[in-house]
Amino acid sequence: MKITIESKNISFDDVANASEVVLSESSVFRQRIGDAQAVLLKEITDGHPIYGVTTGYGDSGKNYLVYEDAKTLQLNLFRFHGCGVGEILDEDEIYNIILVRLISISKGVSGVSMELLERMSQLLELKILPAIPSKGSVGASGDLTPLSYIAAAIAGEREVIYQGQLRPTMDVYNELGIKPYEFKPKEALAIMNGTSVMTGVMVKQISLFENLLHSLESFDAALFEAMEADTTALEAFVHDVKPFTGQILCAKHLREKLVDATLVHDRLSRYESFFDSEHHNIQDRYSIRCIPQVLGVVWDNLSIAKNWVETEMNSVSDNPLINCAEKSIYTGCNFYGGYVAHAADTLKICLANMADLLDKQFAILVDDKFNRGLGENLKLSKEHYHHGFKAMQITLSSLSADVMMRMLPASVFSRSTESMNQDKVSMGTTSALGLKEGVKEFSSMLAIAMLGIAQAMDIRGVEKFSPHAQKLYKKIREISEPLIEDRRLDKEIEVIQGMLLRGEMK
Image (cartoon, rainbow, N blue to C red; front, side):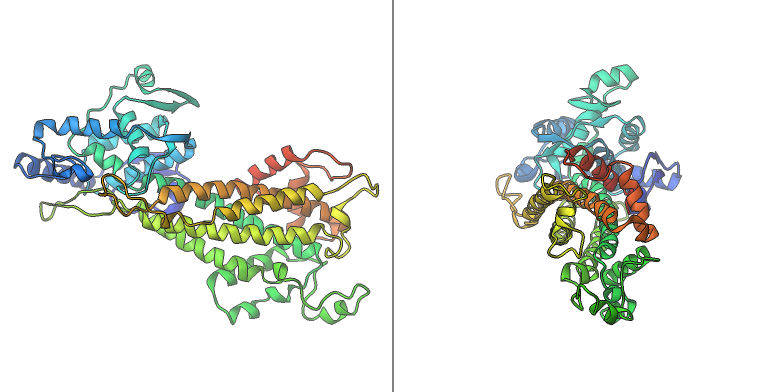
């Protein structure tokens, strides 16, 4: 998807799917950028102290510098922040981060030049991606340390990922005939003093989260069939009288996936089912019957989180800000990533509830005391020395604990840093990275569950299942044969996990 950067907002989905980015040729847009820079330069030449431009940073804001030192100040800003640690972020996350930062400083209130915007656009166009370590941000004054790696790359320093290889930035620049950029007053600060790392990470993680939520509903619909469950709990009447948007949506999704299902029953056939030879309970367990109520909350929180992240990525999150109409400069705290932090924290809690639900569901599916004839550990072999999905259930349950341990909200762990100047910070990037790990772990859980539901369909008879479940079965069986004799399954889990994250099992 091609995105044109100008002053107007860009949707979450457009950023998530961006593959080409260009700067608008609009004279209005370019004039707006130039006007803000002109206001900034006049304030400097008039001798007015401007935070981070002619003063030091943070607690050092009391130190005044003359105009001639402003360029050196910008260089030193990204240089002393070159202390990130941890794994390098994924290439698509780095792409998102540069794009989100470009959107923010293109609003015409950051005081940067068109030349800087063009250089950032060039990074995206040529896929020259600064190698950004994942750790080192407290999420206010923005993502200073990780964003310093973008500023450094623009200036020709540190390392970049280019054509899949980690290389010194200047080696790539020399190869492509690119000269290092010289920052004008405030430009390095404008790049670094914002929430774009946490926001860029969240753009990807929300997209993956949504794929997993759809896929979990596909598993749940097939589970209804495998467990010969009562679909009365999914009927529209039940949810219309408790009209939460997410709950109604989830029930609707499940009804659509269960079209032409023959193994389930409803309120009209419940009595016959109750008096059959197995004497089913007149109601199913909560982990089956209450799926719309459990996942409905998740859908609603996902909608809120997506909205907050979209608002954040279209916001100006640096400091100070230029008001061209007044020809004045404002200082503030838009670099505080509270909304992104709370969005990530909330989705971690949602993910923990999804993991808990799936753990209970899979435990029922593999246990012959509860699975209504699917047998011991979903075994297709009658030999006692084969074990079916016994160990798979253990791994899934172990992963559920890992996901649930990550639900602790990072936003409450504000640290006082930088000589007590940054004494209340968001921890937004920490929370976003925690969600990232949880998404990976839950996708492994769901991959195991998908292999299990395919095994259950083999036991019941695939032809008895709905068209939607049969499509799901076909995708799984293209990767993994039915489990008869004991064999390793880790590689098959990994392949199914990738399919889930790509949204191929919705």
